[in-house]
Length: 462
Image 1 (tube, one colour):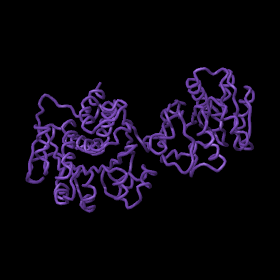
Image 2: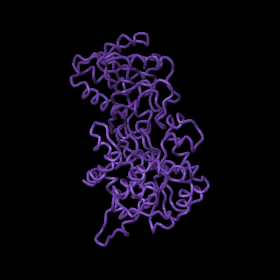
Image 3: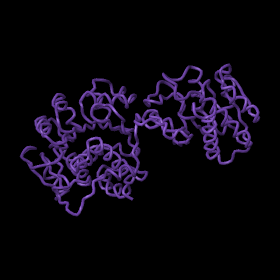
C-alpha cells in the first residue's frame, strides 16, 4: 500500500467486485442492488463497487451501519453516481426488494462474531430472495481460522482480493462463502513466502504421483501392509485393500482375520495370518480399520521401523507414547469424533475449530495428521508450517467404508515413497476426486469410490 497511489488497491478491488456482481446479475440496468456498509475498508470496497453499478443503470442503496464512520470517499463516489443511503432502520425494506445484496459489513479484521445490529441484518438477508455477494469474505466468519461465532452472512458468491483467506477454505466458514472468485489486485511477490494454508491443484498432485520406470518391479514400487478387519468387520479389510491396490504401490500384503474375504475379492493380495512381523517385508503399514479390540496388532505395527498410517480403531488402541516415540513417519487419519477423543474435548469443539484442532493433534502426537470431514486438513508432524486443505470431495463421501478406502490409498502412497504429508494430501485429493466421479450427483458406496480412483489418477495426470 505504501508503494502505490492512495486508494489504488481499493479501486482495483472495487472494479473486480463490480464485474463479478454484473456477471451474477446478467443485466445490470434496472436491477436493485443493496450495499451493507460497515465502517472499514471493506465497506469502502462495497461503496466504490456500488458506484460502478449505479453508473451502469442499477438502482443502488447503501445501508450505513455506522453513518459517522463510513468510508468518506467511497460514500461520495456512490452519491455522485446517483446512489442512495439509508440507516439500519430502513434495511429490511430495501433488502427484501433487492435483486442483489453486497455484504461489506466486516472485513478480514473482524473477530468474535457480528455485533447485534449486524447480526439482526444477517437474519434479514437470510430471509430475502436476493443473491448475496460477500466482499473479501462473509461478515461474521474468522478469516484466519474458518471459525464462525454466532450469526454470519451466508453468501452465494464471495469475491476475495489478492489471495484466498483460510476462512474461505475451512469449514464451518467455507459453507458461508458459496462460490469463491479471486480478484488479482497486484500484490504479486508481496504475498507471504510461507502461507498458513495451501490447497493443492491438479498440477501439484501430478508432480507428486509415483510413476514406475523401465526398471521397476513390484518390490521396487513399494509394498504396503494392511493390518485391518476383524470377524465383526471383515469389510473394512476389503475396502482398505481396495484403496491400497490403486495407490501406486507394487504389491499389497494383508494381515488379519479377514484373509478369505480379501482374497475372494482381490486374489492378487498377499495374505498372511502370522501377524505383522511374519508377513514379509513392507515399505509402509496401514493399521486400524475395523480392527475391533486387537491392541496387540496395533502395538506390533507401531514398533515397525517403516512409515505407519493409523486409522479408526487403531487410533483408539494405540499407545500415545508409542506413537510419539516412533522414529519413522506416522500418519494419523481421524474424523472429528476420533480427534475429539484424542484431544479430550467435545466433538463440537473440533468441528468449530478444525484448523486449531489439526495443528494441536500434530504437535501433541508428533505425527502428521489428516483430519477428515467436510473440510479435510493435513498438518505435518509437529503442527508447524502450512496446513494443506483438500480442494476436492463431495458430501456423498459421507458413507460407510469411505475412510477405509482412503486409508489404503494413502498407505499405498506412503509405501511408494511419498512423505507422510504428501501421502495424506495426495490421498485425500484423489479420494475426493474419485468420490465426485463415482457419485456424479447420486448416492455412492465405498467400493464405487475405490473403483473410481484410477479415473481420478488419469484425470490428474492429464
